[in-house]
Length: 221
Image (cartoon, rainbow, N blue to C red):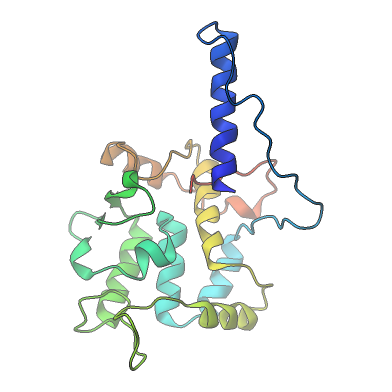
């Protein structure tokens, strides 16, 4: 779906160029996209503040920290967060360094909110002497850090009495809360200045999904 969305954006940009006379034709005009069949696409779940509180109360401490960090910063769970080393975290300056990401533009420093900082602090204490923020406790594991929390996530949702949705959808929740705070959701970790990103995170509306919304703005994936 990410590729389809990017092509649609490109086609729209080129249409504007044609209208302004900067191009004679749009080379993407004839591009066809797969037709969505009714009932096959489920809408993302946007977590309300009350739902989040219920899930946190039902979740083990490490998962609770993952939840808070994701909805406060929009980090990708298995690409950016669970493999994170403590050396990437700067609590003094409130920054997280991301040396690896899905895209080249994702390699940057990301400011953290006050709530995210508390969760980072909690997880650093919980992880003990490990260099990883989320070390695995599974004997003989292929990697020294957590690679999935699907079972504990599903169990926490069941305990909280909330219908299942994927952990990744917490990123969508972050995006809607940022948008509800009056911030245009920029492509994450672009060359935006850190102070601009800090100001954006300060405007997170954590109660956004408690209210009906006419549209949702998602993070560029």
